[in-house]
Image (tube, rainbow, N blue to C red; front, side, top):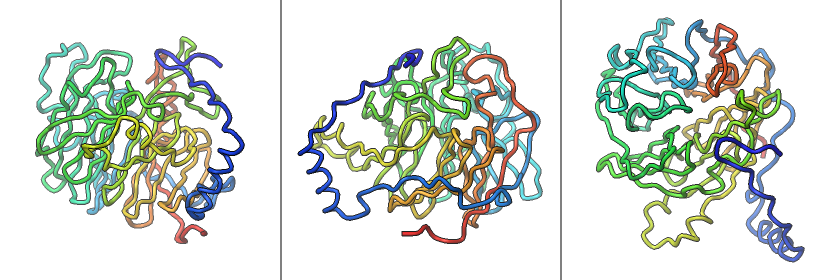
Amino acid sequence: MPEITPRRHFFARRPATRRLGALAMVLACLANGPQAWALHMPKESELGPQALTPFMQSSDHIWDAVLPLPDGRMVLEAPAWLGNTGPQLFIRTPDGATAPWPAALWGAAQDSTAPDTAAPTQHIVAAAGLTRTAEGSLWLLDSGVPQREQPAKAAPRLLEIDPTRNAVVRSVPVQADALQPGSILSGVAVHGHTAYVPDSGVGAILVVDLQTGVSRRFLDRHPALVATRPIMTPQGPLHHPSGGLVAVDASMIAVSPDGSWIVVQPPGGYLSRIDTAIFTDPHITPAAFEESVTQWFKTPSLGGLVIDSDGTLYWSDITTGSIQSYTTGRIPRRLITDDRLHWPTTPGLDGKGHLYVTASQVDRSGAFGGASSVKWPVTLYQLTLPATSPAH
């Protein structure tokens, strides 16, 4: 198998478990009841193509995340790493109009030749993740890295945006001692006064206290958080133009509604679940830390994920162009598979029975090197979700 460039290698297959050990594991799982087992993802979709309809299109922006607001507006992320220029956040009003958000100043284009010491106090350098809290605030991760193959332009930070005032109300820098050489933060989940941020450049979880600004790094280079598998597209593994496999560490994350656990994964990895109590337990041992990461589902290569208010996960499968869901009871559903979903990215839920997702064509964007071959317009789709609950 070819080597993943520039840094990662596939982990060797572990030795087979001894027969008695395997039997003991089976018995233990049976003792824990049927919920201990994760079901396989169904091969057939529940919904037909009529459930997926174009919602809006763009001839000059590639969105990689969509976040519907309760008042009918919608926040769209158009990050620099996908080749977008100009504003990286937009607001869409119910009448279909779009505008830079939260204000024109924050969305103004920055000179790409500006030195790293430039102070982007009112400028989004590199939008890299967006989430909405139960209290209604939005948090944006500004990674400071507009292009993955180039040095950072600014230090990473978290921006709190008040959607009622259309204003950035707080900026929380990520402390430098929580980073490693090569760190590229990507994705954010927030519960209460705590933010969870994956490091997609050097696999780890950063936990940021949004009140004190203290940033701590956990699970550094844990096997579940690094790129040990290729990112699979319908055409096969994703390669750089030079021939090496594209490697991206953990970049997708969500936190449960009660804040008791997070799920995280690299685009080409598997979904892992972690109890958040370990991050504040002063007595936990290093070995217990390593063992606290539970493989939650053998996901395909993902373009993004989102969590609903009941803890159900929705994710976009880039290998087959699918939207799938996964309940807290570990019941998987293949909602739809459609050729129009070319590299679907982070979906958004409106709480009214609809999911929104962009066919972002990331592999055609030039984000990993090479020229752009995006087929315009880029389309954001609306998916009408099933009205029925999953079968038990």
